[in-house]
Image (cartoon, rainbow, N blue to C red; front, side, top):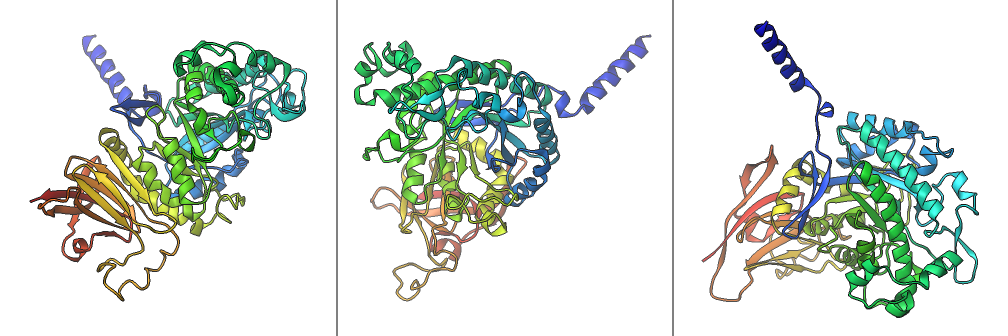
Length: 542
């Protein structure tokens, strides 16, 4: 009898070992912080999201076969996909999760992770993805009233009925997801999409006016170090916009908190942007007032603690705009995550400063083969040529994305992108500095007259960039493309610098795998990254 019991125990142990990961207790993804740096933990280890956001109307089973091939060409490990309220609750109280189930199954089959985009009451501020029973019932779900007393078209964030209905649907979604996805295929959820209001700074409905005339919530008073009073008294000329930001952030918090109570996946919001230059005084009527724009992030943070970050949707062509947004959304309490960026080639270079600022992920918008393009925000059409600049970056980092994420969580990171004027840049690295130059041949120096009268083919438009992880005071991990990097001592003293070693290689199962040493021509004229490269560098002063 004892032998039989031992045999049964052995069989049970063997069965447990053979169970697929889905049947075991897979850790829920989480965002963690340590020493001022952040990591997205997936399967209990740091994960770098190399993503793509599908087009808005690609969220149907029949269309998915046109989505996955684009991810494969790109080298993406994650798909961001809308889940629309109208799709899961077309009739109030009756839920349909058939698309989500199909999406989960296919994502696993293609070995991709998912980020779900909850298109609830707000999508690009509007209610177009809310069910018809919400959109057409103006008595139950009132519209926002603008400063001229007219309905704006946006659903009022002050409506208790709207909050309750949106929350109920989101709870149903998260409840189903928790049961249907023990494998943790879904790693994050975006709550609503680009909240805010165009053409009206805030809601002027009677319900909103009553709240506006009342006291500012204590959490804002304490968090911002203000004296109690009504909104106008406390915030003066900014009162209307700050009030509207509080309203939307409070709305999102209600929905997110309810969903996380069921299934605590990391949740974030995305932002339709305003000009990143704080010196430019822009009337909030000209951008998405109330949404998580950089000037009201402090209010969003206090009002919506269930949201781990606000992510910028970068579509402004040009170096100054993109870099300005990256700087504004990289904060000690707001980890950078690029969940939407334009798909035209000029945006690909910003992958490198994103990593340099500790980004948890990077995802161009609209790369699927459904035939839609959002030009002029992105590429004129989606094809191999438009995908290629992004694929070069993803395929460089993809095989080492776990190692990069782990090292970036433990060490300082830096990154730059080629400016529109191709100007050189300098990265400060303690006692060292790195000069990054563009449009140079791999041999020789620019001051050699005649050699650099023409630039290498393919560098006419800005496309270069580098990212660095400083592993120790003298050791660095460098990745990049279309750039020359020259290291030197920061201090102007009598010491000289030498490369102790420059190794090209790759990571395999968490270990650095040496391929070759760079020396001679490959180091005499800086480290030239004419192609995507991974280099491990040790510097020495003497």
